[in-house]
Length: 227
Ligand SMILES: Cc1cc2nc3c(=O)[nH]c(=O)nc-3n(C[C@H](O)[C@H](O)[C@H](O)COP(=O)(O)O)c2cc1C
Image 1 (cartoon, rainbow, N blue to C red):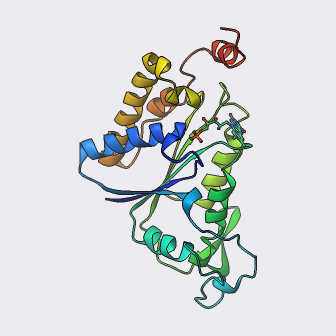
Image 2: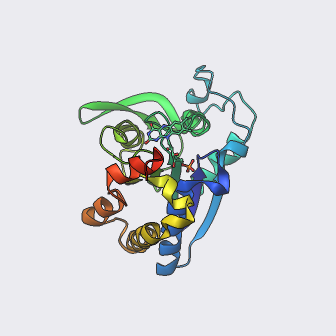
């Protein structure tokens, strides 16, 4: 399987979230050898969408000639797109959002009804693509925190999406927290292996991965310097 990882963390290799993503890839590779490529989005030249809609009309291309042209080609040549990012203000970091906006050339202006909502008709053939969101965050609690990012991902990629969220993510970059982060990364690896084999992850495993690694109050006290 060809996997494209879009690392939306400006912290590049130091990203807390990428610890989770790397464990997932390890699990997938354990099941079967995969071909993966990681893009640090912060290092790419991606102009903001100007909203001119010229790309959506008659097979048009974007007015910007920047790194997005190559990224779009790579997206279309992939089987699995992993959006790996930290939660920023309840959504994705701005550089990754700029990339998401610039995927507009894949859609045409035409819209169709899908259940209760409308969606644009594709202009490129990306029906084969599967989407995975891996999102870490700094708060100890997932509730009233991840929901906006999850809703956006589901609406943008209504078919074939899987979502992994993990609270207390700065602990992944703290060696002294290994006693709790190592077992959590093992669970993520298991999820990767499962995903490679079945195309999905058990709800119970996802819930376990998404639970706090240490009690919420304890985490908050550590961050606040109390413990
Ligand atoms: C600008 C900014 C906004 C953030 N917003 C949130 C937030 O809404 N909820 C949250 O739990 N953490 C938030 N955080 C914390 C990060 O999600 C957290 O530090 C994460 O572990 C960083 O992951 P990374 O190393 O992969 O970039 C924010 C951090 C920054 C810098």
